[in-house]
Each structure stands twice: as structure tokens, then as C-alpha cells.
Length: 89
Image (cartoon, rainbow, N blue to C red):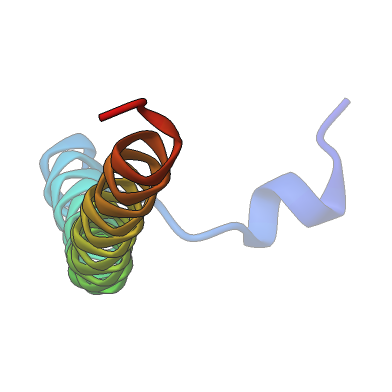
């Protein structure tokens, strides 16, 4: 028994199928590479953003340290002045 759909099916060269499969694999590989490139670009952008935030936080911390030193020096001077006023002599 011969099925009509099979009888009408074209004969395909296995080498042609292999060639088509290789082209399809290359195409998919190219898409994967593009996806990876897009992900790398996105990660690089995020890295720059985070580095900027880190630099800002570092600057903020340095400013706070400077301010804290100034306050400490001022308090030390005030305490010494009070101690001198209170010392007998």
C-alpha cells in the first residue's frame, strides 16, 4: 500500500538537509552571540553606573570623616578651654 502523501513527497538529498541544518545552527549561534553581546553591553553599563555610585559614596564618606575631625578638634578645644578656666591657679 502506497500512501498518496508519501508518493507525492519530493526526494530530498541528505547533503542538502545537512547543509540546511548547518546554516540553521550558524544562524542560531549568531543569535546567541548577539544575545551575549547585548547582555555584556548591559552589564558594562550597569558596572559604570555602580562605579559612579561607589565614587559618590566614597566622596560622601570622606566629607563626613573631614566634618567629624573638625567637630572633634572643635570639641577638644572647647573642653581644654573649660578645663583651663576651672583649674585653680
